[in-house]
Length: 344
Image 1 (cartoon, one colour):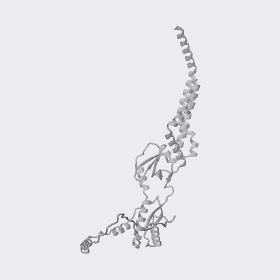
Image 2 (cartoon, rainbow, N blue to C red; image 1 turned 180 degrees about the vertical axis):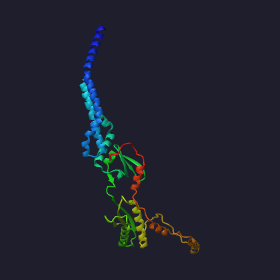
Image 3 (spheres, one colour; image 1 turned 90 degrees about the vertical axis):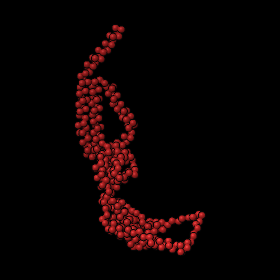
Image 4 (spheres, rainbow, N blue to C red; image 1 turned 120 degrees about the horizontal axis):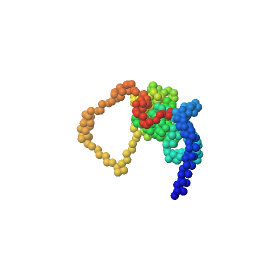
């Protein structure tokens, strides 16, 4: 029992002597580690200055600065462990950093994918803040792009958050990059009407509408020979930064329809055929009995025509302004959907 106690005391004394011998170097290593910890941020800020000349992306600069900071801190920890005589432990930490990184990468695969996609979006910049885009059937004004998601404000005023990986991997339709946008609609005329005259009337209306661009020029083409109508497809271009495509389309449809009516052109409905498999019995009424009914029908007042109201409405100033600016104003007044700076 006494021998075991003496051996333990000897081992403790050996450990104590080794600790005292390594204490000065360990203290120096600890001071170096603390100094490098404090200098990590300013040193990383100086190191990324060349990056700012290559890319103006705030997100890329932030990521590179954090990587440099982490490397400086790891270097300080490594120096401390080496001076403290813990070389094997230092090597294990450095080698284990890569293993831990792989484990974290698999565990947070979606987060890492969104983060990498945000880096690529920040570099390539397929759209900017306040652009009108469409991704996966969602259309709206770009309000915010963070390291996780892209936030759109649609034309109903709703906030739509789309993960950046989804944005990057899908088709992005940017409707603001080119302000000129084409619209079209179909209007049918009867077979007894002149096609050339109808095309000329529609073209005159297009040229008289100030919101319709002359370059590219509008077109009025025969589309389909339907069962009861000749369908004309009318193409027109507008500047969506200034005018709403839907409002201009509504105005043109109404104006062209009225011009066709004034010219006496027929616009029949599609023909419908009703089949009675069992047949139908036709009864002929006595004219004397039917006469009072006819007299009663003649006495019924006819509904008042609203043609004058329509003409008066057409004479009023029509609002054709773009709706995108209203959505941008709503997006500015709304709260931020999540914390984080815009990366675009």
